[in-house]
Amino acid sequence: IDLAAGLSPLLADPARVLTQPQVVERLSRDFYWYSPILRPQLDGKHADIVVQPISNAEIIAVLRWCFAHDVPVTLRGAGTGNYGQAVPLHGGVVLDLQLMQAIESIDSEGVAVCEPGVKLGVLETEARKQGWELRCYPSTIAKASLGGFLGGGSGGIGSISHGGLRDFNTVRALEVITMEADPRVLLHEGPAVHDILHAWGTNGVITKIWFQLTSAVEWAQAALAFPSFAQAFDFSETLAVDPSWVKRLLTVFEWPLPSFFSPIKSLAREGHAGIFLLIAEAQRAQLEQAVRDAGGEVTFAEPYAGLRSTPLLSDYTWNHTTLWAMKADPAYTYLQCGFDLERSREQFATLKAKFGDDFLIHIEWMKNGAGNIFPVAIPVVKFTDEARLNDMIDTCRANDVFVANPHVNHVEGGGRYREDNVQLQAKYRYDPHGLMNPGKMATFVRRNVAAMAGKHA
Ligand code: FAD
Image (cartoon, rainbow, N blue to C red; front, side):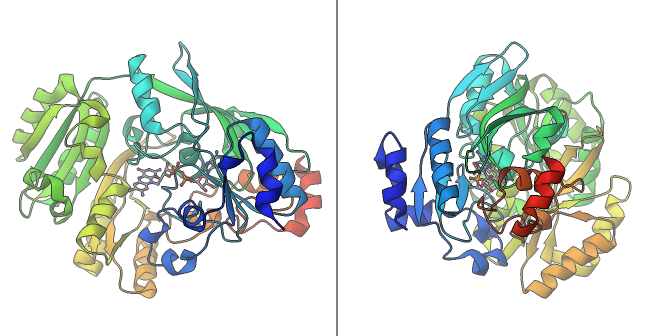
């Protein structure tokens, strides 16, 4: 089947059908190579062709054609996902949405209406001009797209005050196009957004997003050093749980993690744990005093000048921390954990006693959907072999530490799967032939479609 011949006439400009092998391979990859488990599984996987639509009409035409010819379609925003979410396992078409990047409006309630390809950094900058800012964003803000964040991300900077993407109606509504003989354009509002959120593009194309922003704050960035991890963690907890501190980011690094941040080594103190913060500029002096009182040192504190700040401390937090560690030693990889606020110190101690410096603690404080503050961790771990990595995961779980395993390539294995199964149900309704990112929703069975569609239509 000649994909280029079939798809080119469907776009206003056939130049947006890309066939050059290096380009197709590049646009079939994401950051799956973070995982030593996923790397051998996904190396060499790529689409046959890339299509870059600029309108719903083009998306509908492409999906209709692909459905008729049984061609798989994998969606792509900016390809910064870590779990191979955007890597096609069975060839076919990569539908690259980066050209659909309009911010249609930001209303008086702070709801931005956007196309999926808008870069989060562009949205943040535009929002701030109007007195708003993103509630939460990944540390990849400069590159990542809003549609990709909703399809494959979970939270990040801002989540300490506003929770993750799934919380507090941050995603107010979505427009979704289905993968059927006659693709439908549907609106998912309120709780129905969860049918599509974090489904890795397996059950519909998000084509428009109603995204709740929050009032902009004048921020300050600060870097702190404490002689021990215990002191740093204690201090971070006092800030985290006290709502009078207005904060956007609160990250704690065990030594030697701060030593891996080569461009900003001057902010680290040998052998000391580090804290990076975004805190209200109005509270900077109060913070500096509190740090001194707690036996710490402020190694950097300045008003935040937006994404052009130098240094930009968020570039070292969330999953960027892992990137810096891997630059220092490629044997590092990571886990995604949720600790128990009451038991976290005991849980840290158990893991450190067993794995020592092969398990370096990196905490991101976060608020959950119930409004509770708790320490999420993206520990940087030494990879020796799969059995030891699994032992780390098992040891976490045996000690009631939640693990969202980033070393699996399907939605269900990643720890953000929903027990109410709404993403799978939506897949039966919207992608009955299983053509969207096939293989990534492992519980989908094509032969069950008739029964499931009847049940949930
Ligand atoms: P892509 O990688 O292109 O896509 C992600 C998934 O969404 C894919 O399955 C894709 O098929 C699907 N998708 C894309 N567009 C659509 C659409 N329009 N409709 C439906 N599905 C779609 N993530 C966090 O949550 N928080 C972090 O702090 C964070 N830090 C990171 C740091 C680094 C250094 C790296 C490499 C990754 C990090 N990530 C983080 C993961 C990633 O950056 C985020 O998930 C990001 O938001 C993905 O956006 P993207 O545009 O690159 O999406």
